[in-house]
Image 1 (cartoon, helix red, strand yellow):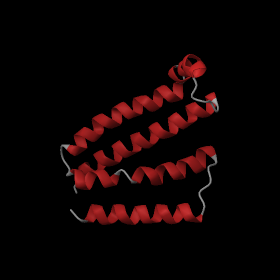
Image 2 (tube, helix red, strand yellow):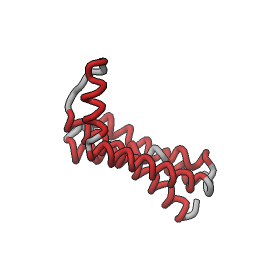
Image 3 (cartoon, helix red, strand yellow):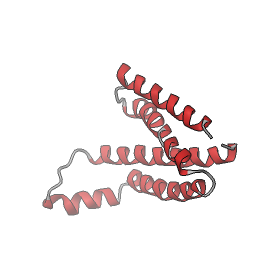
Image 4 (cartoon, helix red, strand yellow):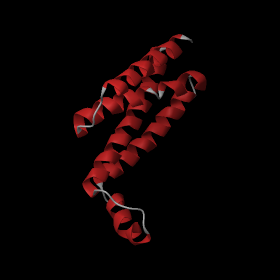
Length: 124
């Protein structure tokens, strides 16, 4: 895989990870809510007007465009497994930004993901 191809994939993955983190930040501002008919309008409005949620959805849109560019250059059997990098990025940033626990079992899983991504990247 060429450096610019990996760069496109990584940009798509990082935008996707940013989207997840922004959505989480937006939901944290709103707080816990239940899916109930009475919540559709107030929670829907809160979500629709939340800057982190809007930012997260915007990151998703841009990540799709970047992903399409990446897929035009890289085989999907190589590109798609690279999305796993997002799990690593999100775990680290969720720990740092939100104080989410990342214990030994998660760290082992993250290490396995990293090894898998390296194996797939070198298979081309």
